[in-house]
Image 1 (cartoon, rainbow, N blue to C red):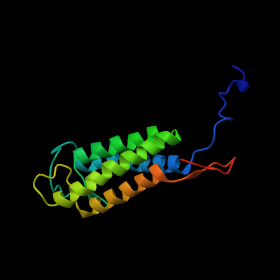
Image 2 (cartoon, rainbow, N blue to C red):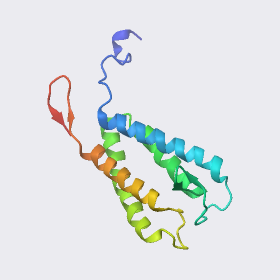
Image 3 (cartoon, rainbow, N blue to C red):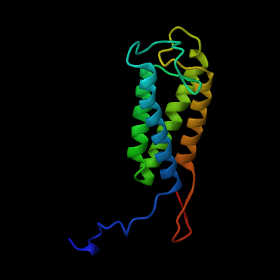
Length: 148
């Protein structure tokens, strides 16, 4: 194939800020999920009140799996602006629901995610970041127009 056939990447635009933010959030959640297994192992998968934390955020093996899935989705969906927007909505809805869940689940025996108040605040921040990714304007560097 010749260099003019469109496979050189020269005709592609750079990553937008929603894509970069999706990539960063995805990488962080993936890393936290992997590191979490070094702390929790695989025992007591749905344990509540494990006293096992990463920088004050309580975790259990199921919580680690959730972080890995969310992280992998962020990496995969950050490739396009529409994918990043979809990831933003997933964060906003998923972590918004996790925040509401955490309001009732902290210190409850049925808390299968093993969340604490630090997790709740992080879930709220993640939901707000998702809204920013999903709804934030992107300015086109060539035309100067804002696109959705």
